[in-house]
Image 1 (cartoon, helix red, strand yellow):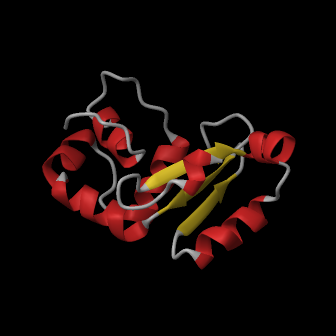
Image 2 (cartoon, helix red, strand yellow):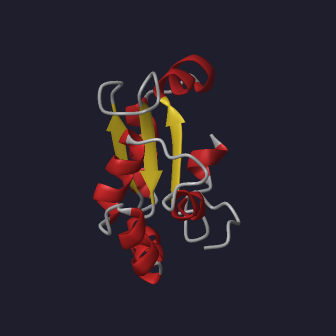
Image 3 (cartoon, one colour):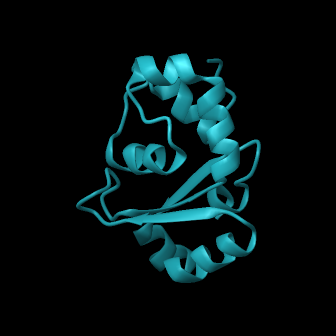
Amino acid sequence: MRSLTEVGPAKPVGYLPLRTIKDFVKLSPDTIAADAAKHGLAMAQFDPKTCCIKSGALYVYDRESLAKLLQAQADAVSVAGVPHDPDRFVAHIAAVWYAEDHPAYPIIAKAFGEGVAL
């Protein structure tokens, strides 16, 4: 759950596979989404057909912090070919898995709060 509960300015995006939520966390995605909304966070749920995670995934994100990150890295975002809009960015990274050597990887890692230099 830390991937989701730590979402904020230093970690704009977090996710958990739907199977993990169901089998290990023992909560519903709707319950988690409601809690995220109480804290001013956005949520997006993706099924296996629209997500690169086998069981689908629930993403929680701080829209404002993610927008600031994407704007601060606008040139790198353009080069990487990922969306500048926070909602579209989350949908994109849910659908596409990038290798570590791809230009999008450092941006995505930073969005997940990893200390990757951009």
